Image 1: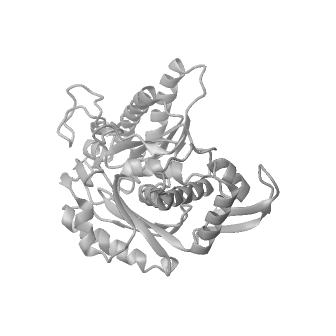
Image 2 (image 1 turned 45 degrees about the horizontal axis):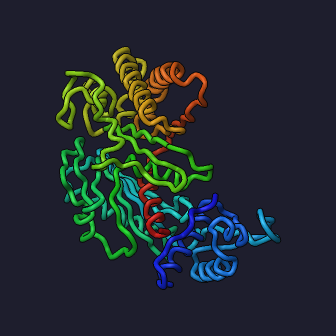
Image 3 (image 1 turned 45 degrees about the vertical axis):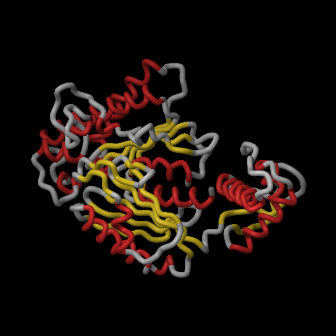
Length: 394
């Protein structure tokens, strides 16, 4: 992939150098194993500029080089990769039923992770609990001696990036919470960037940014947990999230599927979450809180009331997927979150509904690539860490 031409302020050599550095690092991220000659071609920089920049980045520990290989142009060159041994990206997620933290390399490999199943209460207590989990993570031997590049925190609601502020978390009852400001007093000076992001948007970002595959045209990540959310990530020409004017793009859990339906935690009626979400399934089956939903249902999956409830929830999920696909037409859909662990009882009716309704409008088009992630425990925290790397590189 060729980057667009670089624009810079005349005479500002420091600014130009920073642009060049960002271009080189990002291209190595996109194309691990690229040679210096191919870097010059892709970034439209001179070979001399690329050579000096690469040497500096090697000395600073940002890059490593491997064996000789034939590139697309010129003579064989040394393969360049992001250095996975010097830095660490920290990511965290505040969930309705627990907290999760990860430490990642520059390529998204998780070095260490921790989680605790505990209901989030008020923002201050949750910030203190999360800080304790982060301090415990920093004590893991896998992170010893690494330079911390920053901390990204994913939260279950839309976020204003200007403050940054969690605008509303219906399933926590939080509104207008400056969570990072609450968190910082409980942590040492970590250095680097700090950011706050919606959990589904963070997951979508990480799915694209840390992917080893070709970047999708548009990826939709569907988060199935206590609530329902989504993140929409454009992969080309430069990966970025669709946010909307107030950051509400992707809040599919509060799109209305049933006029005059049940009341949702957000205050509206008939939201998707009243039909398919962790909390609505618990309410329909009279399940107590304090136990993970998949554990509460483990011995009851053959009960008629459980099967009927999950069938109806699955059909509602299929309707939600269909509406999302007809609205945004993503090339890829990734489904993750705790509800995926309920298996076919929920997912089969959802995917059957989706495939049936997609077929009528898109009979001659390439089908959407749909993936289910049942191992998505740390996907949002890892995605928040990916956003730290994007800030560092750019």
